[in-house]
Image (cartoon, helix red, strand yellow):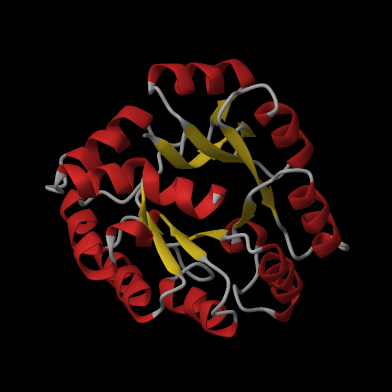
Length: 234
């Protein structure tokens, strides 16, 4: 099974990348994906897109600066979305700001996970996200990019997951394949998820990074799909 735990749809002009519905279909077909989670700040765009692609599931992009975000979150989860995407860096808030807590309460009630961008100052460093993790120990939190490109943040992301049983690590954009194997060793294969971060990164390159990390075939089967499917769909 191959399940991509980090996929974007739509335009991202700040970064000069975009992915339309045809492109999403192509990635699912070329990568032979069994499933994946998709998100964009325009949640209605996500809803329309995942309805057209077999195996695609929506994450609600929750910006706590928006009035009524908790009610909107609950509504989209009720319509079949399988979790929440939080991006404190782009939307400009501290991960444990009280404005985030109503969204986390919805996730607690719905037993759904949050995927949080991790790896950039000032709002998405692992230690800042850990404050939220400790506040809501019964909500599963995925550290997207598991610290991204800085070794200090990568090591810290693994440490945070090792300290907190509700924390998962997602592999996209993190350049050190050896750290994927270390993450599996320290926190368990069930809490390490393959993600591509398309269209920001190439799906095949990101998958190859996991495959070259030195994991056993059984561990690979979990990281490349079973762990994410279990978290998002069970």
